[in-house]
Image (tube, rainbow, N blue to C red; front, side):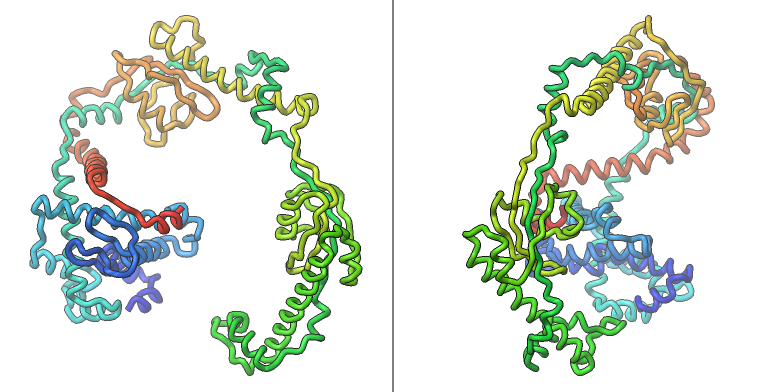
Length: 531
């Protein structure tokens, strides 16, 4: 059934039904809830433990997979691994299961229950199970069967879903918006403000920063890692290419078949189905010969190096293997010579060795490397004279930023008084906007929220705020209040607007309290994997 839906998901109706199905199943159908305090999803291993309730790995995996599928349907091809990581879906999945467990426990203690009639009504009301606007029992059975879910399991899951909904609703229904809260919001939305402000940027005060040699040297010493020259090495090396060796390596039929079985993923058709051995026999033979030749060459290189490693003579090793050495100048790890560009494994090993040591064999796509560290130059801090300009630029920028903030803090204190001596600017009258656009200042949602809390009695905030690269000290110049008479006819509407956010806030606070009273243990392996 879901296959059919996916094929027709461009249909508005089918898409709507599909979304309903997915969202309805999240946290219910696929979670394999357990019974009582025995656990949620009874399978080997656990994702988390909440008091005496165990959340199984199976429940966690199903919750995560269903969340991922939901986002996949929403974002389509834009649902990338990067977006998934940004959304932190795995952590969301386990957190939702923990919250659901806590809510169900709270429901029991608060006497919240769900009747059979409520379960039946909820299922009958699901669009996914309706034909022509009415519940279709046959479709219901068909959908469950297609997803390998029994009616009992689905109804039990629906019961828990309704129990969670009713308990959440009970918490949210206790929330009320007072007349004072509504009035405050009314004035926030309808009043017009004018601000006086002083602003300071690092560029404004940079010339006031005085730096001596002692300051520069202290900064250089404390930030040595920024200025140290990188560690460098020079190598002698050679590479053994195995491309011409495979023809001398015979492989038996048994070796060929064994190679094929171990590497079947190399031999697939356009649908990623394994190709029959007989069809790729010659390719398998060639690949097996190449692998055997590479192994033989590696073993020969390793034996030769081991026998002569104490001599430290790379030329001797090269001669015995019929190779010629090459030399590099000094180079850093992130600026390898062209001949060794991209040879990450080789370079990593080379930088681990001491000067004069032989290294290898290191096998890469190009061949088998053996090398010697001719010279190794440690990272070193250059003298101040050599990097003075850069050090001064960085320290001046840092000190100027600190000075700009300091001046803004002092200005904010002065604005709390009479503000005498300050060079002030003023905004035109403006109203509240959720984007945070303040005329003459810039965009800052935090500052927008803060200034609309100002009153004649409390005309200044306690501290300045950074907007872009400037610090702003502000004071309320004038607040043109909306007529009080306009509030009464809008009071109920304002309360309705405020209620959802306050309900969500109350719900979060309630869940936080439940978590604080519960003993929650995460599977350490799962926690590490989610990092």
